[in-house]
Length: 255
Length: 255
Image (tube, rainbow over the protein chains, first blue to last red):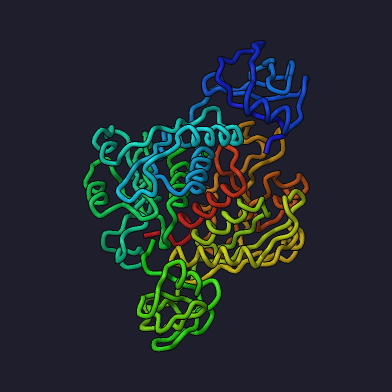
């Protein structure tokens, strides 16, 4: 991890500008890290790149940062969304953190028939995404969208965005080791055949998609069912694995 | 997830044999799941495949299972080890669970110069691996080895096992976005050029490897440094990403 604290802030950034820091971020800098005037910080806002800054003044509850110079130009992550069915709290938190590290451009909670939760605290998940973006050297923070029902999402889907559907956690009797019938192709093979355009990864809840949901997904022309190996992966593991494969094969992990 | 409980047990398994269940597993079946005589269970032991079983009798503290028939023959996971530097507790636990789901054959805690912890509760981590193996439909449980120092591990390494080294979290000034100098090749490219034999993935602590450790690793003929994209990944994310890519490209995720 970097030794210089890195903060996501709201205001416009430019060399010589001053930025105020309050609330949790001020607490973190002054009380946890015990930084005062003169200490170096880095800031980004998702629009203007990343800047070196110096703490100009500090009280217990607020700081002023002076931006000394831009160190990186703004750069977008690839256009990959993650759609996930809410899981138990710790596993959802983990998923948001990992999706941010792995460069998801947007995060969409999806309510499915077997979802473990119907409500999502979007503001809390957004804070987790901000902390992960600060940590992972991203220049933007993936927006966490309001939860929506799978049917509504599919009905209004832009068909130019390929929807990659992790066909995990099928119903009893559809085990991945039970035979080839109906088994999705390995994700690496599917990605090699697909174009390099906009994409989304959809991962279901721990209980899997219902037979009706799977049928509907498989009949849509923009959907690509993919397999993630012979073992049954938890939902958040499937999401991390699918994000990794997409970035490595179709995204920005190339040399 | 499967509706029928799946248990890892120690005894030999054969059709018609009886197996005793005690302790935490008995508590889970009788008190958490509230199962009694006649309920179906599945069992595996890492050697004899997987069996359907029926609860023959149950008290509050022990059960007898009768094995009704073998449903899967024993099958090994690919020969991929995970070597990781111990992290904070929750992140280490997560890593063990994910490594088991992603089919690591053995798990080796490694003490490095910047490790967050020098001691590892191997018995606790082994229990996490057992629970994850039960969940993920594996037929074996990856052994969690005793922690050893990186230098000692490298000194006695079998050079026929390729050691894939996630070159993440470098020192300040070696940021992945800072230029091409010394940057590792993308892991997907390295794997395409590598053979299909035995391998291990090595992931360092949050603070990264020391310059001396990195130098030593890069000079060893069996080591392959790999890159995992332009964002900085936490150690456990790097491990999950590297395990995923290896299984998808060199392991058993093929069609």
